[in-house]
Length: 357
Image 1 (cartoon, rainbow, N blue to C red):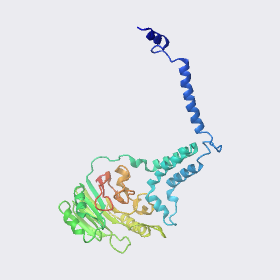
Image 2: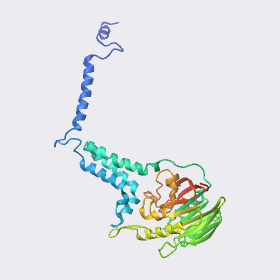
Image 3: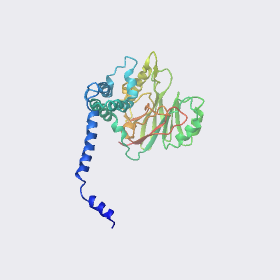
Image 4: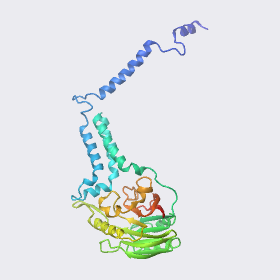
């Protein structure tokens, strides 16, 4: 061993020995400096405001978002139907949280960060249950509803989508005289029974009968009731396309005709004699929309009971709301999902049902 090596061994710490006091002190000094910088950054700013007094506007906005989520039914409809507009896109209000998180962090505001817990908590209470998978296995039959769109760019592609869906019962809305023969011919082999009333129709692998138009107060036919004879027993099926809503510059969120139609449809379902009831259609509103209460208060949503996620169906390319609905009474939904986009501006939705509850 050289003399230099011996010197290095003599002066260096032995393996396993604690660092020299000077090194430990340096480490502690580095941590202290970082801790002091953190304290200073969350301490008073140039104006003398501490972390509890900064970001009060952000905290107030977080409180407003939480209030809108918790008491959305208190937002009045008298001014441009703002309440219904809010409820149509209510889940998206949760995006305000990450938006407000940015200024809360930039301002290093403890008050704002704590306030953001309010909308987070309320949003999770309202919608957290939708994020879990609630499916419960195979059912007895599958149903599909689809607003195929009057200006559908690919009716033949829609036929292929429906034929491959695995459904025994298919409801279609916004049928046109030009496209109807395409659907009738394309679905005939898989669905030998069908009924069309106005611009809505139903195709079924099971016999149908006792069909009657449901007057939803719009002057033409966009809803009917029929009886489907499933292998498990009779089923009353309602197919409906409620009037569209509009966001207008001078009228706000106009939904008057839709609301009147919802009441008429709700009255018809309330008077239904059969215990097993299925509603398929484009209701132009979500389950949160108070204006659809005449319908939603009587029936259970397949997506809410057996789906996973929000099941948004419109618009097709970037779905933001579930305005197409599958609802039932007297049966158990076991699964619910959304089909891929086709030539329509809506996406088809599907659900699986067990006839016996």
